[in-house]
Image (tube, rainbow, N blue to C red; front, side, top):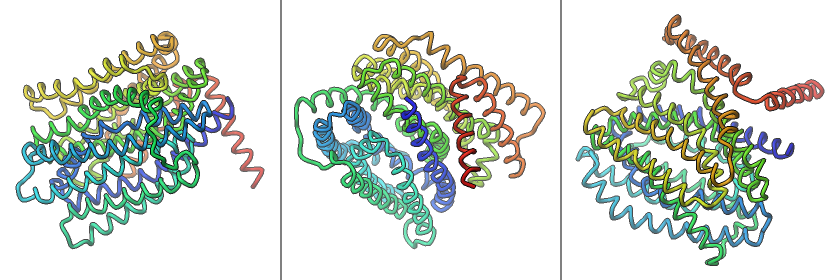
Length: 510
């Protein structure tokens, strides 16, 4: 147990190192790319690329990760080899299907439905074709990434992110000095980064994990449960795509590429902040699956409770100062942010906070493997985002409508996920409420009081110094509430003991 905690902590630190580097580069490159491309071309790139992302529902990354981690947890290395090869075969097939769909249905949608100025359609076509190639490459990379996560080699992601960040800075430099259509050039350079990173991951896996040496494998005993699991996961993936890129398409149809640019800005900030919790969950998820594989059901449930509670608290800390000064942060970052950017960012982050509680429950459901009813119910709920948003956009003509729909459906989905695990693995709703929801609610109430006091007696930032000062105060208050009201006593004691141990070692070596 202690070794598992140390492994989770170590892997989380590696992933946080990756996050801090990514965060700085992401904010800088997003600003330069937006200023270089212009709001319209930036919106075109994201909505056109979003058409290809819509076909990502075929990607069975969750299924691949689950089966590889499960076999590794059982230490069945021979079956692990066969599972990897079978998974890669399946992903080759998925890449071909993506190509066929993209060059037929997707191309028709690009040419006939998206709202893009006629003089930029040629550039949009270039972006589209290059995005297809990128999607196919990324699809075949899935089993390699899943293998690294299953082995809990999170340090690899930190090293690769250094390379990726340097390459992205190179993209920005070439984009600024390049004497070529900026939108097309950006798409070419982005594809080049995808190729380099994918190649690195494949070489690393081939050298370090024996099971990652591909051999054509079509073992029905392995393929059948994988396809069955993937089939129901596919339904859930369609729902997530409808919620994400489907809404992006709706924004384009109703309001044009300018609002797509605002949506992209919100997703960028969401991605940076959710990295705080994604890193923690990525380090913890293999342990959830492995404990279920080893029939350690008590520890399996404890990890789900811990992950849900701590995930929310971890994301809440950086979210609070962003929400308080969202308008000034956007102006400081982008100079002239697209319309609706601040509203999108605020609602997007609130929605993400709800989802952080749900994500460990999703991992638990996938570990169990019997996901037919789960995907039918929750997938249907998530899919309702698209038609409900469409109807309300027709009525109200307000872009933020889709986020309110998403928030309501996310709350309902959380309830159904809890009920599902109660039936499948005897998850105690009472324990979940006491260990997770009660603590989350108390922290939220305390932070809401601080928010109210700040807004009543303290104006939002109008200078960088005030922004930094206010953010520090809000982070300190949020951290205090999390430490004393959001985490359990034994977790707080473990944290203190770890910090004291590190400080003692530092002074000893010094």
